[in-house]
Amino acid sequence: MALPPVLPGSTHQAESPIDRALSLALAGERDAALRWAAALVRHDPTMPSALCLCGRLLGELNRHEAAREACANAIVRAIDLENLPLAVAAARELERFGGNPGPQLDLIAASFCKDSPRLGEGAPPPPPLPTAEAFQPLASVLTGALLLNKATEIIHDATRRLAAQTDHPGIAPQPVFSAVGRDALRALCATFTPVWIAAGATVIEQGAARSAAYFVARGELEARRRRGDEEIVLARLTNGAMFGEMALLSRAPRTGSVVATRPSIVLEVKRDALDQLAQREPEVGAELAAYCRDRMMENLVRMSDVLRVVPEADRPALVKRFRTRTFEKNERLLVQDERPAGLFLIASGEVAVVRRDAADDPRGEPLVLSTLGPGDVAGEIAMVLRRPANADVIATHPTVALYLPATEFMGLVEDHPAVLAQLYKLAVQRDEETTSIIAEEVSVAEDFVLI
Image (cartoon, rainbow, N blue to C red; front, side, top):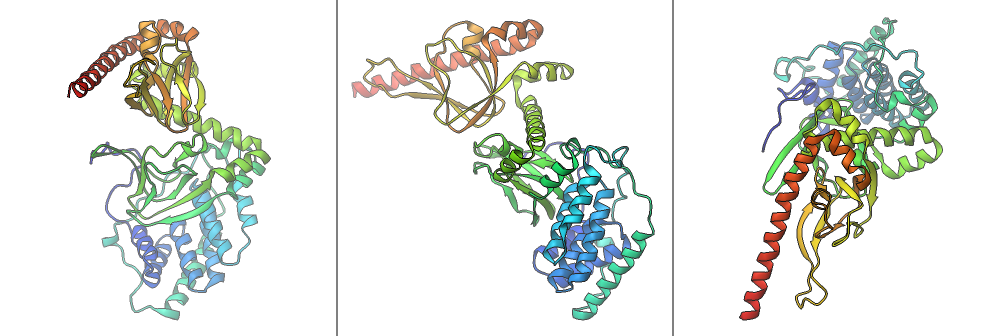
């Protein structure tokens, strides 16, 4: 598997104590997991993931009051560390064990919304933990009621120590969350469902239907894409990252997989739930759509050979020239033998380039020349070589494309000659490939007739 360079913020390193605790919990080893999680809280009562896990474990072991206390502490500390997804996950755990999540979700929304007095310069990241091998969990002799009593005592002590901290750091503005008002953000938080994931588990499967987007609350995941027999790692996703957001813009199948490389907690939000929310809170719908479109553009710039030839500083202005268009399955972007309406960059989904034979040709079967996916361009042969399209381009799945009208094409290439050079190179290459494929098909057909 091809690996990318380690990205900023990546935690790709030895197993940490919280990794060990989460792995044990997800494997059903609750006592062992609680010994690790409680020891972590004793070591650092400000660690929200350990507090949240303690709350989850204590609740599952019927210490509901202590569970709610641990989760409430986790919410406060997650807010201090600018981690809204983890704060929401802790609020949902508190709700599981009899707590009222309403005031906690109100606090989260008030802390992160666009009018929050806490928005400003963020707090520095916490120091790294020692490795699991260098950390000591609670003694293994602690089991049953003794373990629960000890863990509860540690949570009470953490509450006292946290209560003594009267100063709370500022919160750096967060994408999407800090762009909407308090009520809208509160409603958005209510749509999230936490999902706890073991290392190695697949969250998104390439080729599967899109139905949800995700935010990372804790952990690390890899976005991967299969191309033939090769699997490429596209990105590593850590706390706060959003992924799967194309589900909010397109119904095309997933173009890649996302796999947890560490035990992780993510927030899932269903597209249907967001559609309903957008009806009630248009501000949320508009902000999410703008954010997802920006992310789509960023991904497209990284994948598109045409856009990459433009200096990075000029790319945002270039992309703004394009309009977003959606196509249903079997809808045509280009029609063979007709002048194209413009140039298309595929952002999501898939299209087939299909050559239709003349009506009086006895072979009569359409010929699929190629398929195009995200980052690919369609219509360049007709636009650059100034002739009708030599094939249909048909959506094989619901597809999102960036569209540049033909009337604006010359203005773009005059401002960015490198784009014209890249498109010309691509147009000539594809035109030659098309001619070669058609000639090969004719040869095969003639051989068949002779036989």
